[in-house]
Length: 109
Figure 1 (tube, rainbow, N blue to C red):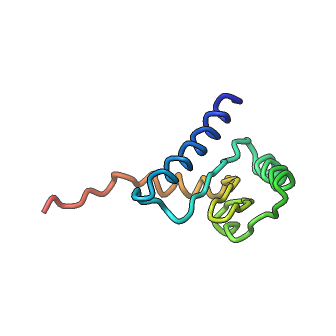
Figure 2: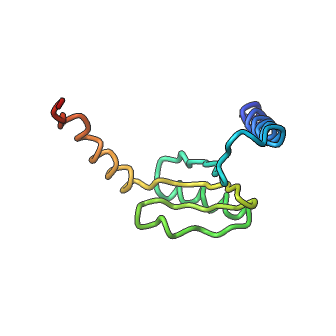
Figure 3: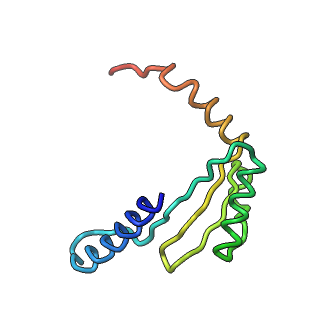
């Protein structure tokens, strides 16, 4: 895990240096790095996000709560670190919608 973390940090630093050296290369005006909680229960998912919020000094973002997401974030200018838990009801809705994927085929006109 530490190697993957170090690789991510090095990649971000290398990207910053690359963009600095190549001002002619287009780049987005903002970026978000996501961490998705992987616990089994909604309670454990929320607890993981609560712990991250405490570590980074942020609050829970309830704007996504109606969508079944429990999240927190911290900003470094236009760069955001966002930790998200996708709760069981949201996962079930997503699976239900995806169960119809490929059931309808458009005409090849």
